[in-house]
Amino acid sequence: MGWDKGEAAQPGEFAQWLEVQLSGPYAKLRHRGGPGDEDAYPEERKHWECTLADAGWTCAGWPREHGGKELSLAEQVSHYEQYARAGGPGRMGHIGEGLIGPTLIALGTLDQQQRHLPGIRNGSTFWCQGYSEPNAGSDLANVQTRAVRDEATGEWIVTGQKVWTSLAHESQWIFVLARCEPGSRGSKGLIFLLMPLDQPGVEIRPIRQISGSAEFNEVFFDGARAQACDVVGKPGEGWQVAMALLGFERGLSTLGQQMQFLHELDLVIAAARDNGRWHDRCARDRIAQAWIGLRTMRCNALRMLSGAESGQLAPESLIYKYHWSNWHRDLGELAMDVLGADGNLLTGDERTSRLQGLFLFSRADTIYAGANEIQLNIIAERGLGMPKEARGTQ
Image 1 (cartoon, helix red, strand yellow):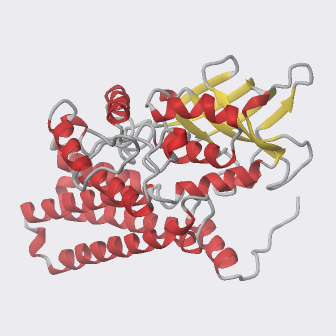
Image 2 (cartoon, rainbow, N blue to C red):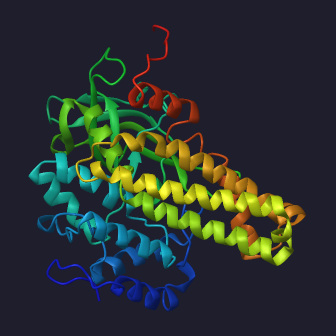
Image 3 (cartoon, rainbow, N blue to C red):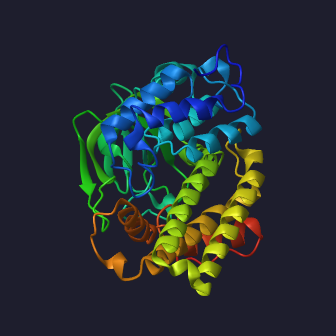
């Protein structure tokens, strides 16, 4: 059972429920669907979202008035960590529940909240993120997707391309950052739109990765439309909305990410014990350093939570992406070194396959969502107050 009447569950209740579900009807989903594995069992994971919702386990931090449980930060920490520790599958509803949902609660209109939040809460509507473009990845303010207002209907006509859009092929809605003021540059003149994907003028193309998965997509807009009532904030103020959303992205859910990292580290340790690499002092030292890095990551994540409810980034959050992405890439390299020659073979062994996938996917960790170089600039300029990097004029 979940929570009743908005009350927090007794300690361990969620863990007990997860154990029953993940040992029974959803056993094959345990520890599946995380980064690099997001195309695993999509239909089953959609059903899982409904099961979570029916039992009352979604939207733990949302206000009660919007269908959430309004748990305290400490209770939410416990919630996310219990889920990940039990091997809960990667959430198909994460973008909705963790990103656009809190953004609409904080900045959306009453109409937007009433139309969009129930489907997120009950696990029936899935969202994806339309931020990155071919020339606007780490430099998000360089978006060129255009939105032009139709004076006759008030709708916004959207033309352009988004890329690296996770699970767009499994989603019904996308939120899009676009340029609505001709001649504007950088963070000025942008608009934040909510758009249905099932409409004329939208094309979704999968991007096949080196690991063999294709959870990422290109999304093309050719005259697709967003309703006037689905502008979040005001036209021209899209950047502020987009940055608030990113604040929620680096909030409580990062603790669940770290529990997934711990599971991967456990797989590396198990492989080292089985094939004898555990007796190699160098390998043991690297495993110990990985464990220390993960504990440090958790401590910093707890420091970040001061801004999790408002969408404002705490200063500690500036280092988070740089830290975890480099740590995770190093873990992938450690996994291959532990596997040795077996890491070059398709053996059919599930653990070996998971570690190979970890290595291949983690190569991109230091590039997507802001490359290392961009992250270091952010830390220097916003965190340390150093002079901004010289940029050429256009």
